[in-house]
Image 1: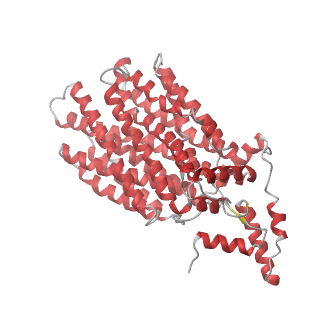
Image 2: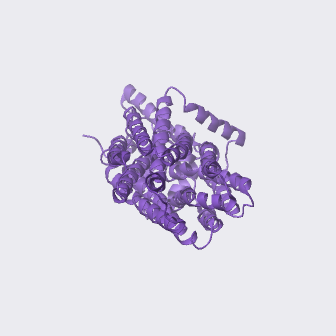
Image 3: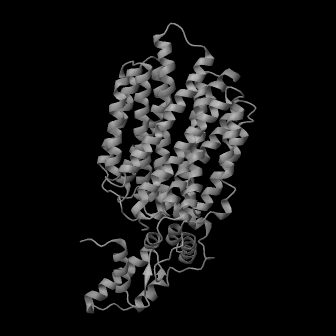
Amino acid sequence: MALDDNDEQRQRQQSHGDGGLVYTVDEALSAMEFGKFQKLVLLYAGLGNFVDAMEIMLLSFTGPSVKSQWGLSSTEEGLLTTVVFAGMLLGATLWGLVSDAYGRRMGFLGIAILTSVSALLSSFSPNYIALLVLRCSVGIGLGGGPVFSSWFLEFVPASSRGKWMVIFSTFWTLGTVFEASLAWIVMPRLNWRWLLGLSSLPSLALLLPYGLVPESPRYLCAKGRVIDAQHILEKIALLNRTKLPSGMLVSDDAYARMTTQQQQDDDDDDEFDTSSIHTTTNTPLLPSSTHKPEALNFKTAFSSFLRLFSPKFIQTTLLLWVLYFANSFSYYGVVLLTTELSIGQMKCHSATLNSSNVQDASLYVDVFINSLAEVPGLLLSAIIVDRIGRKLSIIIMFILACIVLLPLVYQQSATLTTVSLFGARMCTVGSFTVACIYAPELYPTSMRATGAGTANAMGRIGGMICPVVAVGLVSGCHQAVAVLLLEAVMVLSVVSVLFFRFETMGQKLSNT
């Protein structure tokens, strides 16, 4: 019979002998459980996810208004969306490298400053070119979204990681609903500049509590800064009103060396020499002020990027890229169909169009209702992710999305169209949520943000291509082709998941 985490830890500590008790970050987090400290971490990381959702969602509302005011062509309007995703493509890799080289906190600072300043300035854009440049800068900042999820993930005990990562994802849904509500209030009364300005305020809020944001203890241990990690764990225990395990914190690789030494000694005389513990554990305990040179840090981070393509990780990396590309394409495809199908059906099947005011009011209502579909999607993923696993959860939700979207191959009534899109968005956001949990779990701490960031970058490519393909097909009265294309991409996602070699449900995060 398998031992639980506490039994396993006691067995390890006892086997090391008196005075040689040690524990890892995973064991510390399991002992302290999810408490007040993690809830504060959740709020800050969730705010980053909330900002990401708002800035993406507002693209549905500002494009038509800017086009009308400045007399832009359809291509120029579409470029306003494309440059944001292009910036996110660059930012996803950039911030992953920065946070793996200099720490999660340094990544947060750069992300918050670039996003908030660029977003606020874009509301004062004097011309089209300036707006393009500033929105691209916003996109670069938004590309740091995976840093927030990786950081939060590293504070959560393994036993409840899936549930709390789904709760973290609810901040995205809250952001989309909030932005739809804000646009519904602002756009009919003011203009797109006010919407951009007001939407930038949450990103400014990321800077306010920055001085209190803790570094990830997993990251610190991976960098050899075990004393710093110990101090943070002590703060977690104090705020959660719990206790750390007895003994001394060691990094995972140091523990692995001690375990190897113990096994060797057991093979020799079935007696473990406790002095080997003190010899080994003193090695990683570097002073808090000891840091690697910046050039060496970045070189290490770049080597982490190259490791994504090593024989050990290349299959995982490529499959994640396919999964994120297809997931992003499917999600944004369903979001865009919410508006494009109604407009396309009016153009393709009606002799006359509704007035612009009625069309605008209908747009805000439809987008708001469709945004609410993410709530049951998150609930569904929360229920199944820690029960049936990451892989099976993604597969089931994509199959359901294919089924509910299939009726839209042919023109349907407005009610059935809304119901189908509601169900499809519910399932795609659920699968996207589980994928965002799965990706960082597949990589060790030293390359977790880089691996998740590059996968996210591939997803941004899907987001860039989707508007051109989906919007173009529906606008050209090719609804069946657009829906079948989304179905094909969802099938591709299912196939990619089948080839993953590992299931991470209930598994501890790896530092090595």
